[in-house]
Image (tube, rainbow, N blue to C red; front, side, top):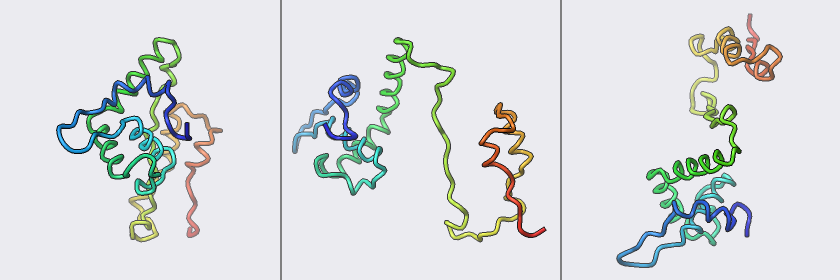
Length: 155
C-alpha cells in the first residue's frame, strides 16, 4: 500500500462505480483501481499529469479515464453514496457540511495588464464590511483583518 492509494476497504466501498468495461477488440482494459489510484495521486500531489509514476500506466490513459469519469458524473455519485452511508450512521452534521467553492484569482499583472488598478476596479471597503456582517462575522474576525482597505501611498 503506497501513499495516496486506496486501501482494500476504501476500494470495496467505491468499486461499483468504476466497473471495468468489456472491450470488443484490442488490448484488455486497464484495472480501474490502478487508474483511480493514479487519479488520486495526481489530485493529492498537485503534480502535472505528465509526472504520473509509471506504476499507474501511461498518463494519457489515466487522464482519459479521469475525464470520462468526471463527464459521466461518477465522482458525484461516489460523493452522494458516501454522504448517504455516513448520514445513516449519524456521522454527518448537515449544519456544518459545505463544499469550499473559493477561488484565488491571479493579479491583473500576471496576465499582462497594468499594475495600477483603475478607480472602477477597486474593492469598496464598506461593501466588504457589510458582507462580513451579513455573514455573521464579528469585528474581531481574522477575515476582517485580511479584507481591510489597503491605503494608497498617494493622498
